[in-house]
Length: 419
Ligand SMILES: Cc1cc2nc3c(=O)[nH]c(=O)nc-3n(C[C@H](O)[C@H](O)[C@H](O)COP(=O)(O)OP(=O)(O)OC[C@H]3O[C@@H](n4cnc5c(N)ncnc54)[C@H](O)[C@@H]3O)c2cc1C
Image (cartoon, rainbow, N blue to C red; front, side, top):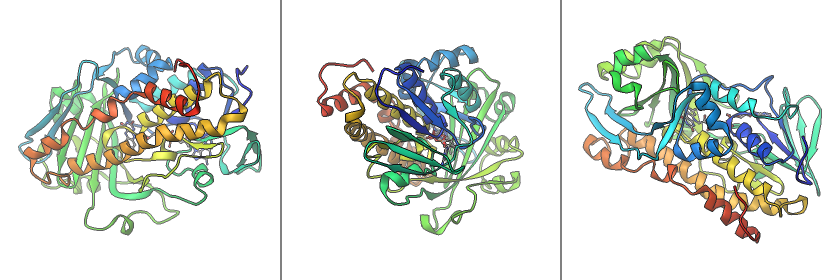
């Protein structure tokens, strides 16, 4: 892989964030290696929703066309139907997607396969679990569990919610906290979803909301299945008094009875839908709280969940990772960037990305409170509508190119680099 630059980049972690960044760097001719702890790139089951802000990144990186080609289905509008999960199933609000607000729901495995095909050969290194990152005067060294190490000019930690690179950036261990919410995820046949929820589920996502519980259901791009995520929150105890202890797993096998037990007294559509999820796993949802005070230190940076792991209630975590990758690759590719000013470039990345992604992190928490009738309007279903109005506006309509230009002016770069 020939590079247009005099520096080399290392990416730790090949999840959605690391891989989208890799495609961005490859398209801009920047040399990099990815170090992934697993023996291959893999995503765990289920679907991921991609909003208009992230669609822009996928389009620019050439990923969107491939997904549309493989799934044989165009983008859809991001309307969202909010319905009471309690008996009667009153419609509360329909989020009005604009014509321009198109997005997609995509199977994670399909997304991954598509992205991996766009990577240059020889850049991926598997079974490479990073255990520490150490910055020297002119380079950064990654140490791996197998005793080997790798040195490059910058390291980008895309190593997810349990990031190891985070420790090197913050100078202390910062772990995501259990949010008091557990989730059960499943993919079910579209015919079963229609049987439970009616035909509208084939064209738009649904949210079934109610006290301390909610469900998100959306169809997947070009496939006869829908993605179901079921949430239950225990607000009776503080964050720190619940959840797995250090060293315990954050994902456990569960039974259908256990999942259904959270929904006693809920309406028939919900119980019918849940009857199709026969072998659920239970996820203890964690998030960074408070948000990080920096995403960079020297020539080490964080991207994606490593920087801003958030609750999934705005369906925005992966999208924020993609936005990080867009800005990072645009900044690194500017003609004025070289080995000598990388620290300044990372500071500029932090300056534009941190306020943005941390705001989405906080908004994601707030949306979960609204869906579970613990938001500003409390349990009043009619007023909850006001809380939901425009909730995605700030997520979807953000000018990433302006962020890139802001970063360039902080760096004192003249002229415009097409990002
Ligand atoms: C229930 C649920 C539903 C969600 N739904 C949506 C949605 O609809 N839309 C959306 O935008 N987001 C959604 N999200 C959030 C989204 O999944 C994450 O934000 C996104 O996957 C983060 O990507 P990442 O690459 O930063 O981290 P990850 O996907 O966690 O990838 C990290 C990678 O780093 C590797 N790694 C970890 N540690 C090391 C190490 N020490 N050394 C080497 N490699 C390492 C891992 O093996 C992994 O491959 C959801 C999350 C949950 C829990």
